[in-house]
Length: 544
Image (spheres, one colour):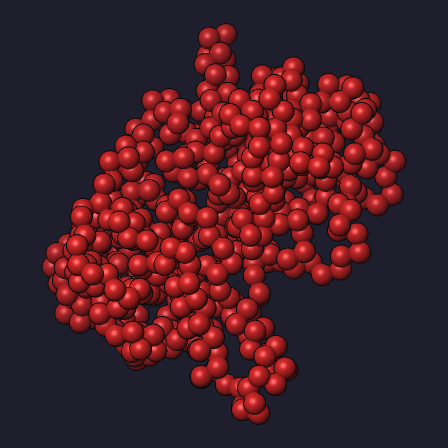
């Protein structure tokens, strides 16, 4: 093995259109290099002015991915964690809002000694510092993969592109590599691919001063060698480094497709690294089970953002991982909670093998979620409630098992006779909405005679949270007396973290977000057992 020397930098940019899959590509290349023995760190650089996505509408931005340290980050960090089996930190996600917030605070303190504060050098230097800060991680990374959000040509992305151009000059071509993900559209009416969008995208990048070393060409169909040669000629990229990023049935095929085209080998050669071939057997077996499942089940997801699946990205992936463990394809049935409110639960849930109620905010659609929970509890259909989903389960149980007809959450109504869900004590008086919830990883003690313990096989767990409201302890005695089981509490026993209904085949609600810690080859225990329960339910249903 050659000497690795200085940390290497791979910069991933995107062109033509957004949402091409820069995050998946960055994670896939990171996985391949990791499998070759390198220590890899991924970082996402987002050009929006928000400090973080915590207060952004899921319809605009998709899921907020929460890290162990409580950082609210972009959903691409979920891809990084899942593919590389890592736990990342706030250093792995940088936004323009964070950059400007830091610079303005320094200017107000007088740190710039009377200088005029400008995009160059002050903004670009801060961006470079944030990227290079990852070198201080322990262990020190061999490779830092920096994904630049947005599309080349966007005004807001320019400072980030200038910053990585400067790093390329400072670190030298032997330590930096530029990858550009672009679209090669197929025009059906003409019956051919068009390379002009890619040519113009690379032209824009070169005008900034960046020459890509590799092109990842996203396409709906296979791209011929002749087309690759044409792209190579016009974009000044070696033919071997013009990679076909064709659409696949599962994102977990992407690393295998890149490896088949020697992407990781090209990267190693660029950095003069002599490394062993990656061992991808476990990954290949996992992909094989996704593509060729033994059985199929239906899981209903009842929420209010069902029109945008990215709002539930980690949940979708957690079901894929859990399905692998049961050799099952999990078909997700998306049900609007408002539709259930207006048309009843039976119309939408009569043939599901399980129901999940995800987290969320706001009163809209809550009554539909409560009705859906009542339906699956009464019909012994497996249930998993997450965050607000658990809170809705508590409300449903209070109303229908304890006779508290007006039970509800203090989040939605202040004048309540039975606020079975209430504001957390440390949230009283909080006025700023950004970054002030109970965020990040917290410990939980699990009762040994519970479904949850069966899943985790341990009494102490740590899971990630994102909420302001909690189970109201005033109602503990009444709810447990009527059959609700408090299966998990915080170590000081103040907070109810997990509830179960022991008389039900599989009914679990959790205040945390288990989907955030599920990995392709390590499905989350609760999702794994929930899917197993759904498989059993499906089997019994067929035998009736």
